Image (cartoon, rainbow, N blue to C red; front, side, top):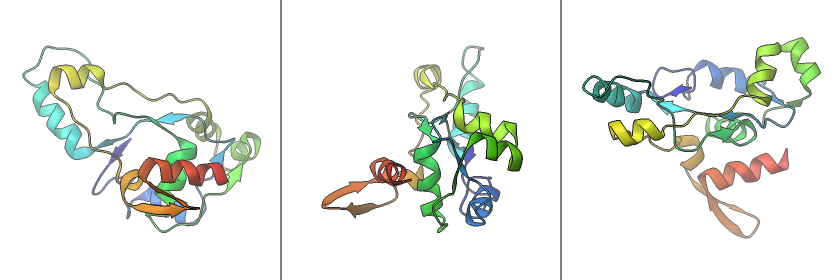
Amino acid sequence: MPVGDDTWYHVDGGAADEIRLQQFPLIEGGQAKWSFVHIEDAARATVAALTADPGKYVLVDDEPSSVSVWLPGFASFVGAPTPKVTTAEQARQTVGEDAVYYQTRLSGGSNAKAKRELGFAPRTLEWLSQSVVRIGETVVSGRERAQAVARRI
């Protein structure tokens, strides 16, 4: 999924709006893995691919994130309440079969070839690495924070 200015997954993007309005639920534990890429990183890699060997280059982040991790983290980042949790059956009725698939069965991509052949170096998702917070007595940041939030829902 592309992230960055003027994308769906930006603080002012459509996903943020849906999450703020509680229209983007966490379905069946959100175990599917999503891969993201910042549009500027994808643009740099695309330019590099123009002079590289022909082939398929997957431009995604280094660590695909389960929906149960990135969705609460993104919600927090955009100032939205924690997403509601719903069953797959309830989600089919309200948001459709595709949403159920994307949150329960999708697997993330691998950027190994792009890193090796294009020098692709994707940035870390801002909403998973933006701040350090105290959870209980332990100081955590980024991905750890989002995982701790995910464990609470």
